[in-house]
Image (cartoon, rainbow, N blue to C red; front, side, top):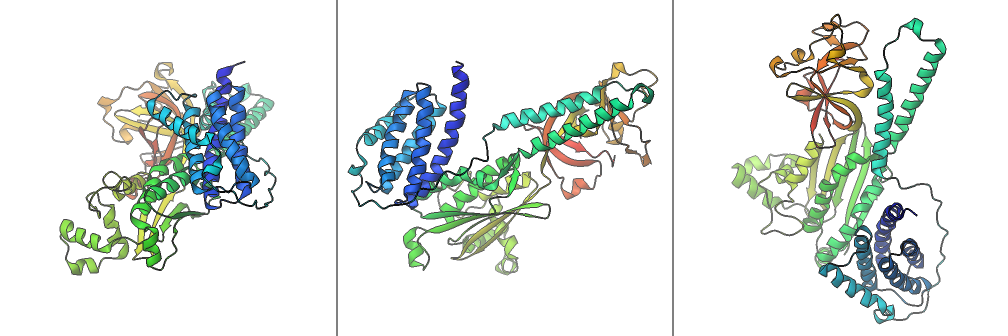
Length: 519
């Protein structure tokens, strides 16, 4: 039995159950008598326990057993759960996460202390926390049909890379004349390439993630922060079924978390302040996701106190030397954009949620890095809305990345017909390619060509249209065939014509994507 293999599967499956457990426990906290939720919680803990027992992970199995016993009593309605009981189960779930990832290790003093605290309380009956009540009968629905499986993101990347490698093999085939290729072979190759491209397209679809799945990452954090800072916060998602590339969502994770933190720290008022102001005790944060034209539009809004206009006015006077009259003439969007400045701060002191290091300028830079924009609208006592607009043309493209002088450039793999080393090129062919470096203004003294790229499509060189045969040019070093997250260029660089986008490599490096039709 390959124990390590099954442990890896256990970690993957248990992590999935624990993510789901967080969500259901938060729901149960708001609907304590709901026996259906307690049945769901019980089922997830039981699944983790079963896998842990099979792998002799006794600590994990034992903790799950204690948590399961409590859930059974809540599910049966013999005992009424309380907020304290839910909190203990949430603490237990957090401890399980550490045990699962840490392979059942509680040797550190901090972990051992937490282990002793939680297991000691779970060892007692939950009726020491709550009172007996008459059971309330609730129908439990059947589990929904399983229509998804959990796939490791790295596996998707590997499959995409393999499909690209196969397509690249076709580009390395030696050129054959028409009379050397039979009609049947040509048809077979065409069909093969068509199926391969279809496979690659389908694999690319696996990268898409519903916004709802992305938002689940923040549910427990919102709940924990709201409790810590004495806020009642409800969280709502509109348009959560919209699917977005997981790479883009991952880059939005930090900006989105900063917005939520600022909403809780500065926007949503404490419950008593809200009630005194005629509002519901529970504040609300809403995320709206939509696709408008070629843009992904995300709106994060709260119904809190709104942005302090007085603080912005003082900032504009003191830091930008603006007069009251100049400030009064500013459009609202320009006025509120002042909070995106690095030196803006509207608080006297720093909290863990918002302050130095988590200012709005951090969010603005992150959105700008994705070639997006952010608009701010706020009204006193009504709340604030942040609208983030990002180009949907953000995509993952496999490209041949190469060095040309001091610059790292790239061409989509689908446009490259072949790659050859310069020494393999005959003397007759050596002059039959264009000087791309000269066209781009790259100093010839910094270049040492080692490879010849043959581009599949015709391109324009110095105003003349090349023949339909593939165009060849020398490059210094082939870095590799790799996925790039491509972002559109800004307005200024777009006018240059030779470039189609900026590609971010997996190591964080930058590559300029060439537009071969415009060179």
